[in-house]
Length: 435
Ligand SMILES: C[S@@+](CC[C@H](N)C(=O)[O-])C[C@H]1O[C@@H](n2cnc3c(N)ncnc32)[C@H](O)[C@@H]1O
Image (tube, rainbow, N blue to C red; front, side, top):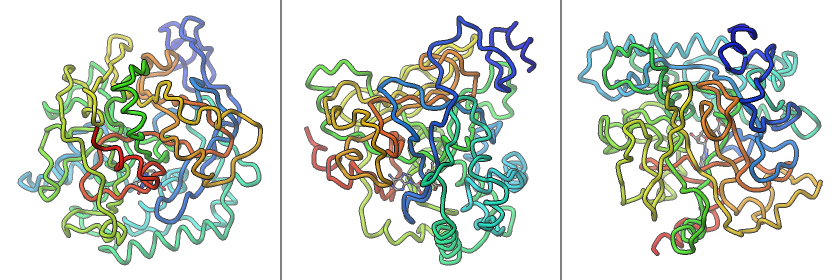
């Protein structure tokens, strides 16, 4: 949409050529270096880090969608083998993961996908020559990707990462070759990386159950999961914390296989938080090939599962309090929003105040233990009125220091999920799990 048309319609023009109408400006992220993408470690892979200090409530970045899947429910067919191969092939066509992979920034962001579909991830020289780090930020509407010293991968780090991805792929089931295998890779890819949002009102869904679109973002899809510390939840429940309820999960959930016990079209619809699921491929082997998954039991899912009142609401929230899923109006359309903000929990807020000192990668527990530090919204409601439908805006839920990893709570975790987040590392999730 051109800028004039966008302005006339009162929308923000994502091409940046248009001006944001005054009445739509809340407080957009500043258009300057905001985040960078680096390796966290070989188990977790990439993560997104703050390039500067952010205050609580400050917008960090705003990003346009990268790969949309038009029909979220189609993803569910992955495990629904009673559907014929025609449908599975359609799914494959719709997801077009292979074609998307031709888009160079996608290769940089999701090298694992390459290995899974039998392509070589880009070489270091290709990344360097293409200025891949900056390209990764190509979809950012506000907030730039930083590429200073220490903010981009070194050749050694990159090669180590790619080698481990390739080794995992070989140890697993090998690259997908048949359409069915490719379909599963596609669905797993969306399960791990996509967000879901309600399609525009005028969308004619081929599947009556299709109420959501799944969208991948180049940067936001690389943000890792962190469990909300129980202590914080406990405060909210018992201590009258006025912070918003931690609400529904953020990630798309493809129907889990029968083995994982999820219900078709059930509560797991959407937002199971299994972006944190290390499963790299299909579920046909019942084992994701990740040794860590066996070594450490998954955190228990919330036994209290309450259906959200809004039929469009996504998966219920974490334990200990009734989930409160918020929907926001966007030009007549309700977009689902997550609300992972921590509220005033007093947990280490001081320690996190901007000091100007960069925080080293994998900063110590004094910073990381505080749990999630940001939240997201898709669409214009609530958090960012200037954001277009299916655009995502990310905001700090507590002060964040330069160098700190951005983390949010994906929500419900899938069976066999091995959570390596700082909250679980410190036992804050498990230790406080019983009130
Ligand atoms: C949305 S992606 C995040 C980006 C990812 N780290 C990458 O390099 O592509 C979700 C994936 O990151 C990893 N991940 C994220 N948070 C995690 C956590 N707390 N514990 C373990 N793995 C995590 C899992 O492999 C998960 O499937």
